[in-house]
Length: 249
Image (cartoon, rainbow, N blue to C red; front, side, top):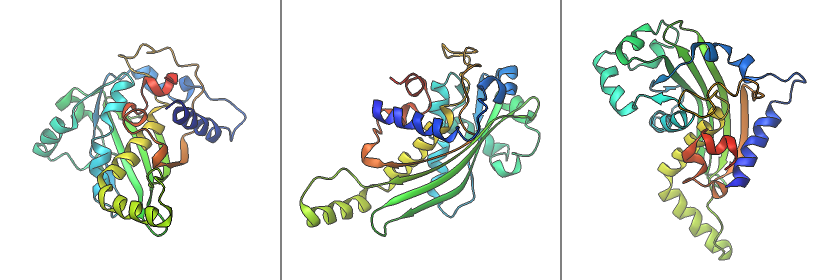
């Protein structure tokens, strides 16, 4: 697990080294520190791809990492009913409009938007997925963007090799293609969240609340390639960008 955490942080640092000037979180996310949002509402993702399944996996996987970063996140399962009743569940219609209505309906301080612009799954030589997602958090009070990052990942979906030569590899590949559709989507969504929210300033319920302003901010656009066999789904990806990732536990 420590290897995966170190790899994630190393990629984040490398992608932020394009400029000699070090930008702190206090500088990059000044509006977020000033507004001090506590309650977040997650909107259904804006899916600009043909992969319909990607939308749900991103929608339902964002809450946990944000919660572990110290924010109170309104349950997507509960908020969806209200959004539908108010005809307000199409995020495309609201990302560029005033968001005070969501503050009134949910008591939300900010709204989380995700925009999926790439989602490709293929199995020419071996199965892999490519995803590109933009994350935007906007204030319900000022309608200002207080957090924005973009993540592009590529995941080799092969399971760990179990031996058996070419026949064993062929059988393993056939089995994986048949049985890992859901898991693959979950891995990609959680890994993207893990990348992006590793840089968000910690919220009110974090022990590091208002103590990370001088921490160097990572790049606004990040990317990485990973092997599914090396990703501990039950640990690193479940905690997303939470304390474990930040502190290297």
